[in-house]
Length: 214
Figure 1 (cartoon, rainbow, N blue to C red):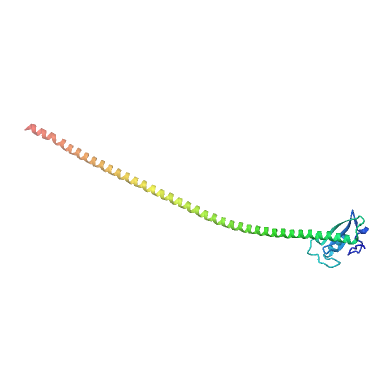
Figure 2 (figure 1 turned 90 degrees about the vertical axis):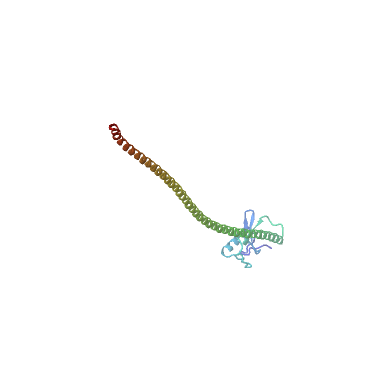
């Protein structure tokens, strides 16, 4: 009993199936054996096993058609043994494919989680930028208020200094007026004394002459 390709019905281990040191053997995920090239041609049209109509569309390319390594040496085992061996190898490939699929789902979940984390970080960055903008506005207002306060302080200090200078000037002016009044008074006294002396000097010769004649 020989194994037939469920597509071309040719012998799986015939000369037409030779390829290098191995036979061109593959199995659909459902377990049906085909020539590897026949399986690829079928899958190009529709992802369905032509023998049992199993739907293979949801599987990856490596899961739909599993390539099997069968040496071209003349079989020393019975067909049943080869079937068992190939079935075992097919099951092994299924298990590996299942592990890879689980790993793919895990990576996809990690990818989604990372995308959500990135979105959350972007939202936080936008929120931080708005907060920074608000704080910068407040800081500018505080700077303006501080500058205005410094200007008011400078104006107040200038007013105080101007008032002090004005008071000093007024005091100096008052002192100058007092000194001027004092000098004026002294000058008036000197003027009166001089006028008195002049009147006295004018009357003295007449009195002297009269006393001499008597």
